[in-house]
Image 1: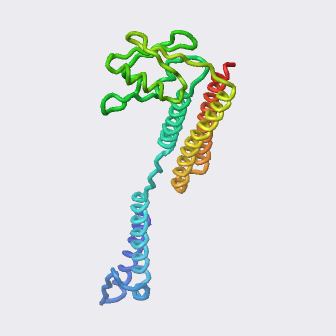
Image 2: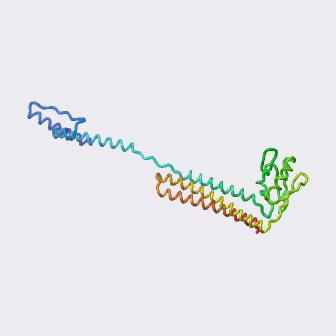
Image 3: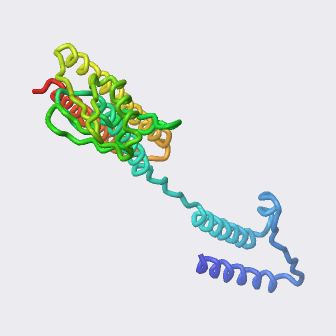
Amino acid sequence: MALLLRRGAAVAARTLRAAAASSASTSVHRLPTAGSLAAARNLPTTQFFLLEIRRGFAKGKKSKNDSRSDTVEAAPDIGPTVKSAATAQMDTAVIALSRELSKLRTGRASPGMLDHIMVETGDVKVGLSRIAVVSVLDSHTLSVMPYDPNTMKSIENAIASSPLGINPTPDGSRIIAAVPPLTKETMQAMCKVVTKSAEDFKQSIRRARQKALDTIKKSSSSMPKDDIKRLEKEVEELTKKFIKSADDMCKAKEKEISGS
C-alpha cells in the first residue's frame, strides 16, 4: 500500500509540474473530506486517483482494527458440573434406599435392624443407636445395653411398639431382644415392601437423570453436537450404574429375608 501511495504521488507531481509549465495561472483544488462521490468525480483525474487511494487505505485500516476486536469467547464446559450434581443426587437416593431396607426385619438378628427405632426420652425423640449399644448374642437374639440406665424402660417400650414383632425383656442392666423366625406370609409381604421401596428410589434416580438432561438441553445452543451427545451418554451410563446398584441391594435383601 505504501509503494502504491508513493507511485501515485510521483505521478501526481509530474502532472502538476507539466500543468504549471503550460499555463501561467494554476488553480489549486482541495481534496474533499466529506463531499459526495459525485463531487469527487469532478476533480482532475490525478487528484481523484489519490482520493480513492486514501479512502481504500482508511477502509483497510478500519477493517483490520475491527477484526482484532471481533473475538469469540469459548462456551464454558458444563460437563463436570452436570455429572457431579447427577452423581450426588443418585448417590443420595441409593443411601436412602439402604437405610429403608435396613428397617426390614429378616430371619436373622443384626445390630442394624434396630437403628430406625426412635426412643422418647423426656420431650425429645432420639435414635436408639445414639443412646444404647446393640450387639448380637446369636442368630436370633440381640443385646441392647443403654448408656444411661434411666432410659432402659423407654428403650424397652420403643422396641416393643416397633413393627418388628420383637418382645424385649429386661436382663439386669441390659435388654434381651429375641428375634422370632419369619413366617412364609411375612416373608412374602416383606419382599413386596422391598420391591416397592426399590421402585420408589429408582424413580428418584431417574428424576436426577432427567434434571441433568434438561440442563444439557438448555445449554445446547452454545455446545458442539458431539459434546452434547457425549455428555448425554455419560449421564445415561451413570443412571444405569446406580439403577443396578439399587437392584443388587434389593436382591440381597430379598435373599436375606427368605433365608436362602
